[in-house]
Length: 211
Ligand code: GAR
Image 1 (cartoon, rainbow, N blue to C red):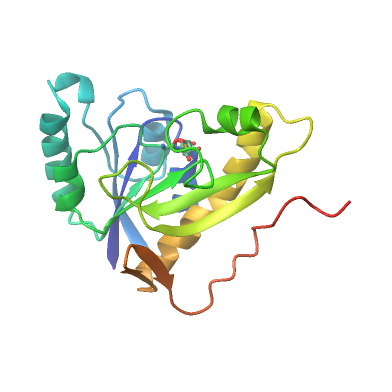
Image 2 (cartoon, protein in one colour):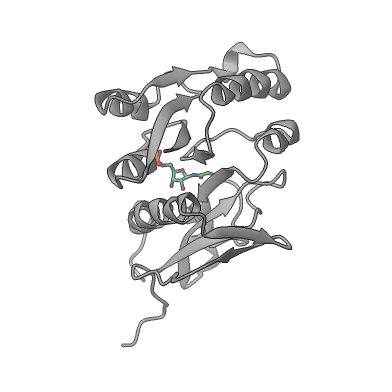
């Protein structure tokens, strides 16, 4: 059985979607940099081991990443799933787990890397917004893309409404990308992901929608 470690910083709804997806893998641990992350209690209630590595207890990124990496490595994961993990990881950390770290980002990358993606999408007036699951490289929010799901930006949208609609897609897209990984269907070739077999994604749609 393949092994997954999930990293969270907050409420953990993507983590929950992964746990609910009944993947053919063991979630060996949920690790948070934030002792107050709501997702920790949720993970415990599902019988998943939880660990806190509080970044505030370390003088710099390098020392935090070293300890975090050692804790992760102790679970011997095949895949590390960043699920709302709000820390920038060092190159050394990323290279240690090369091609085994996945992230979900709440925009259609390469648009809107970084923070406040929904606010920025609304400010720009984009008609399509969404989420991206990608492998993690040392360059922020720019690793090889595995799956994207798009939603329409509607005239009455504010940040919470748009975020909720994107989040609904995140909860479908992330488990699917992880399932493809676990089934050995993802290959990285020249910085792009090739998905073997059927990769239709029934949850995605293209906007603007017909009137
Ligand atoms: C999600 O929307 C995720 O895409 C985003 O944080 C949220 C976490 O929610 N991640 C990032 O912005 C990473 N740069 P969750 O804790 O309920 O999964």
